[in-house]
Image (cartoon, rainbow, N blue to C red; front, side):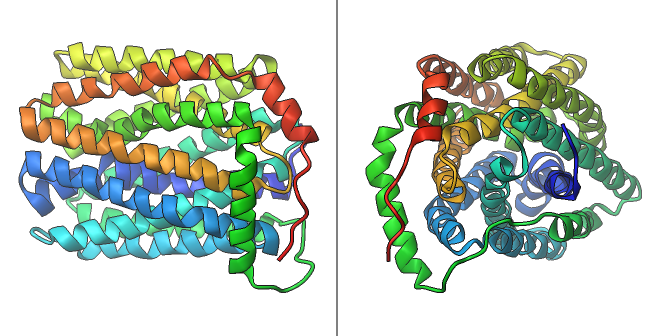
Length: 415
């Protein structure tokens, strides 16, 4: 596998944006919102779940249109960075969220989350352009691995600020981290195609989405995979959003404790992304994803049964392996099942599945905690998503789907 500036620019974006999902979604801001902004654990957890769900609804409604426009106008890079900077701006504005600012705290997070997830649609759609078919698994896995390195560095910076009682400065630090390191992607990553003409892109978007809706039923294996992803991604999103809160509620872990825990977890995540990215090119992708889903099932059961913070520590390390492998290979599989020239548009449908699926889990987690008062039952509710996703993925015939994507010829683009 040969590296060039384009490949490195693509992977550096994983390095840059990891600070947002690691610090804001997983470790610090979720805790800050529940404990400081809301000040009521049960209500705060429920509101946090609702904020995540609402941001996913917005992304699901908007990204298919933006994806179709980006494909036709050859402006994926422009859409990528517009959405990235939306995330950067509203992440920085979290600095002004204080105790009792519940609406502002939810609004700024929702807008930052929308920017982050929308940008990822365009970022992921570059993968088939910058990697050869034989290297696509390794490049995707290495991107995730580099992302966890970025997460590790951002966690170390956050720990320094928290140790000096400067927690509120963690949020602008994350924004600056994202802004600075995404600059490498902006400079190095190239979009190879250029628009052939100017047109009414919204009209084109409508036409292409309608065309995809008509043709999507022909992609039987892609549809089966999206249903599977729809289900198991719900569990992944929920675990990411609530692990820190679960540790706080069950074992009384402080913000410092959680940051240190996730610093260690970055190493298992890096290992999982590298290992399973390599295996994806040696084995059937379905097998590697299902292995990671089995690990997720074990993680959830052990988290429910855990009784000490030390047990929880090892469970989070195991979860790191699962998240590094499942997310990298999910991205690779979609790339393989998607016809060339439709990457941004089909990643928009992928985004719909991912974002809609991300609505149910966080809402369920928060409401189960609010109703039962026991967060153990909340974590147990996640189990159904991994089991059902595993079963559905068994029905996907990968080789058939990849062959169909390579040979598929859609209608010519018309206005």
